[in-house]
Structures are given as C-alpha cells and as structure tokens.
Length: 212
Image 1 (cartoon, rainbow, N blue to C red):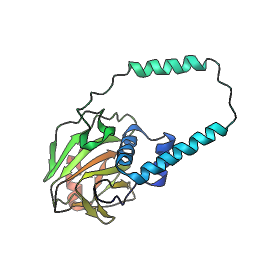
Image 2: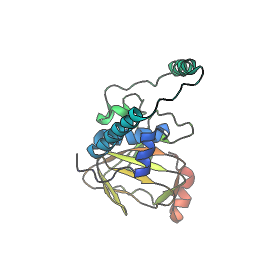
Image 3: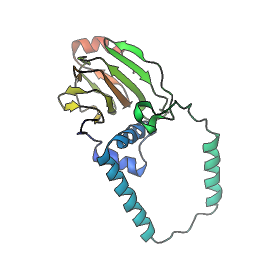
C-alpha cells in the first residue's frame, strides 16, 4: 500500500474514541484504522490513557438495580438478528467481515455502486463505489457529511491525490470533482448522510436521477 497521507479529522477520531459516531461512520473510521499504523497508534495511546484515568479515579456507587439493567440490555442485544456474514475479509478488512455486500450495479458511465448492509437508522448509509480509470465524477457538494476510504486505486481533485488507505471527509462546505487516476480502477468505501448535490447546469438536469 502507498503511504497514507489523509486521515480522519481530529474531531472525527475523538468522536470514534468516545463512541459517539453512528454505526455507518464508525465502520469507515474503523476500516481506516485497520490499514493506518498512525491512527492505530493514536487509538492505542487513547485506550492506555483512558485505562490509567479509570484506575486513578475514585470508585462510584452503582445505581439501584444496575445489574438487572445491564442484563436486560444484553438480552436485547442477543434478540437482535445479526447480519449475514460474508466469507473472509472483503478487501482484507476485518471491519467488513460481518456485513453483506450487494451486487455491483451500474449508476453511470464507468461507475458502479454496491450496497453494504450496515444499519443506517438515523445515521450514514454505507456503500462502495467503483470507477474506471480516467473517469471524471460530476462536480458536486453534499447535503450532509460524506466519509470516503479508498480501498484500491486513486482519484484526484482540488484537495489532492487520494490513494489506497487515504480517508476523505466532505460536507456542504466542500465542492469537488474527483477524477480517477489513469493507471487503474478506483474502489471506495463510503458513509454518506444526506445526498449528493450536483452543481452546474448539467448537474441540475441529472440531479433527479442520482440515487446512492
């Protein structure tokens, strides 16, 4: 893998460590940490510091019926159906091994989309995009947040060149037009809230047909 140059923002990584990200965005950050030694070290350091703080803290009394509440939560988790597991680790990522991957579907010239069965209730939906070498994606912004992890290949836009392992964050303040590098197809894992918002005259015409 090429050197990883782009990582989750500090706020995103902090939210991941605190456990406050929704499932979809947590999957993206977790997948990046798997392939990024730098972010993995940050996580390990945070875990160590958190354990030290807990050891030094004064013990707090348990709530009344605390044990019964915990057991009830465990029973609720056990009753929830687990997603059907895929065989092996897709793209070498353990993070994805518990989720079903849908078939690739054509969404535009040189571009295919597939679902990833991460629950999207009140959060980001997760999917993969695959684009042929040299493909120019539409100029767009977003109505929510979009996290992208490059699994294979590379693309470039005004923010730089993003290769395998790189992590991009975008929202309504960002406008970009990714172009896939010419030496191979690009496959990305995406967690998206809201929708793509296409820009320009042609974008306004195509917007009603864009569904991801």
